[in-house]
Amino acid sequence: MTVQIELNNIKKTYGDQIVLENLNLDIMEGEFITLLGPSGCGKTTTLRILGGFEHPDEGQVLFNGKDITDLPAHLRPVNTLFQQYSLFPHLDVYENVAFGLRIKGTKEAEVRKRVSEMLQLVNLKGFEKRKVDSLSGGQKQRIAMARALILKPAVFLLDEPLGALDLKLRKGMQIELKRVQKELGITFIFVTHDQEEALSLSDRIVIMNEGIIQQIGTPTEIYNEPINAYVADFIGESNILEGVIHDDFDVTFSGHRFVCSDDGFRKDEAVDVVIRPEDLELVAPEEGMLKGTVLSSLFMGVHNEMIVQTKEEQYLVHTTLHKEVGEEVGIRIIPYNIHIMRKGEVEGDEDL
Image (cartoon, rainbow, N blue to C red; front, top):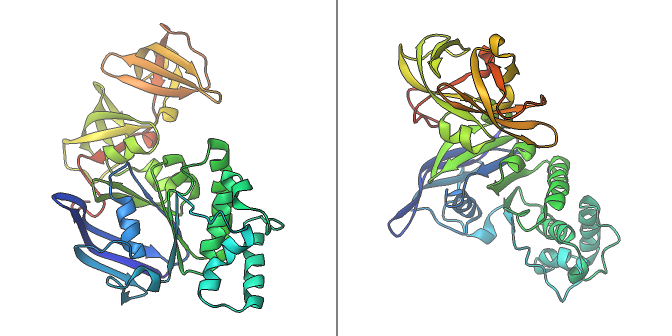
């Protein structure tokens, strides 16, 4: 894939607050990339710098190798879809979608053709004469998307566009967004704080915290190989434990020594150990590597969520088995499901 956008050594402050610190990111042409993190982590500021709505204090923004850091928003080959769709209530659906073309002075025949194509793309063919106030939240979101995409941007920026929708609509629109991106083949840069949304939509995810990129990777890499405790805790649920790795494939945690699948650490290095709750197998007490007592059990639909107290730790366990509170159980962990992380590591550390 070709690098389309480069953010090089970006720094942004507001007063005394550093919002972005030495941010470096390459974005590939045609990918769906998500900036993910909690409120205040710098993801929306990054998007606004990409769109030309904010100027970095330091650093460069390159588009296909050309410096566009000082280029105003209206001259950049990008368009943005915000959480607030800002549709024009006095215009019907057709005129809302056609608005950008009319500003550019596009001929009427071309306007008709492209509006028709966009409404077909977002599955709203036949809604041309409807007033936007009569539409549902999901329909309004698709109209706003069509209005932005009709200008054929090379890059589409999306700032939490699904945040105002209820859960069912969000799920449906996630499918629509991915479909539209695949059909158009253009770069989508998506901002969200919703982990599930990021995992289901993205080709790559950029995890951010306090203006610093923690990890960049595919959804599978981010979930299965978190680089540090912050990423592991932010993406999904995890058991994060203090441990010591003695040698390759040899780690101690919870007062026991285990075989793991990680190597390349220093001898007797203090590490964080991550085990996902679905990767813990409940067995009979005498068959477990660890033994414990079920403190709580909640039925979650597809699994039971349990807290199991061992001698050293409390473990969160997801299992299809039914166990009563107070029941003694064993816990079995295979080496592949024990993930070892260096303490405090982030993407790009020299000692990776």
